Length: 330
Image (cartoon, rainbow, N blue to C red):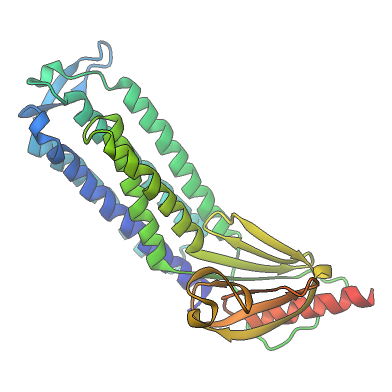
């Protein structure tokens, strides 16, 4: 599978997990608190007075935002499908920004509606939602911006380097080699746990589920960040040496200068050999294991080894060895 194909599959899994999670939460939030809500919910507030001026039945208030989200997600999916042949990292960034901003906005709006109507017998008694809406929009902008930056970073990687057993580097010529591995189902898992964390925070702030909801947010948020950080890895070889970046934003990053690398090679490794998936420490040294198969392995000048499971590892190893040889002669 090519790097670009892997990126498209990863984007599809992540978007699918996020879309389904948001859809379920939009429908479940009002229903979960139905015993504490009036038969009709205030769903619109006068901009001047801040008082409710329109309402919907509870079941409509539950389905209407979900319908809006379903239409939005479908339109984005169709647009991405139509551009499948030419979609690049920037396109995926805009898709992520749209889904991120839209999802957070609708989730925050639904939570605001439920919170404002909570423990009132009549929708006209609903509380103001101004502050909640402002906070929701701020968070949505941040989420959309992060998704857009992640996509643009991915687009800067460019096409994969052609395969080849070895490569000589002419004196003074600049070069770069990039290879990336990602696990789509881990991206989907991170999206789902992230949605659960957002929902737990909204439920705690809105007093929908009590203080115990806040206790769920921390573990799910941490799990989302950790899983996302381990879901993809990118190796980059340039005149500076080797750089291995984790996660969609390329952080954290480990770097080795050419002078600090004794040798580089390709080695077939499996999760069983290194003790499992992810960032592993074993008798073979440190291994970033996201898929079984060929790994780029370097031996540093301190005799410690580091391996990362990426495609076209032979090209990366050849460039590192050539670069090391050039620096040694110089």
